[in-house]
Length: 135
Image 1 (tube, rainbow, N blue to C red):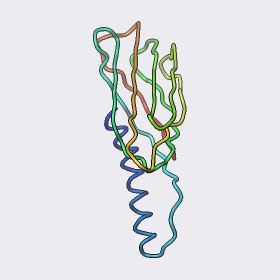
Image 2 (image 1 turned 120 degrees about the vertical axis):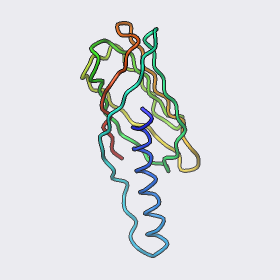
Image 3 (image 1 turned 180 degrees about the horizontal axis):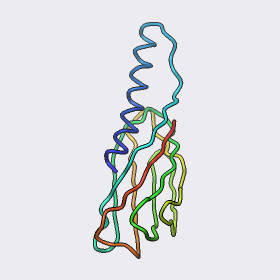
């Protein structure tokens, strides 16, 4: 999960830096129009739980996401939230079932992003999936 969020937020920072450089040199500033797809994984513990939290600077950009767990087969409850807006609880999510939403970030400070996954059917294994994003 860490690699997925690093890729998303690194790309937003690259855009922000490019716009700062453009503004300083009198060039046109580019709109936020990033898009990508990144794999993710997380280790479920003996109780079927996985959680990931990070603090990332997103420059006020809203990240649209669609994600799906690809393996292992099971039923999952997923919580995703940002301290600056966007909180979702998805229940009884099945493998390859897409979930989607938006995570808002602040221009003034880093946003805390939280992801938790719980399964009553799968334990002690790695959950894999794909996270598609745009901003």
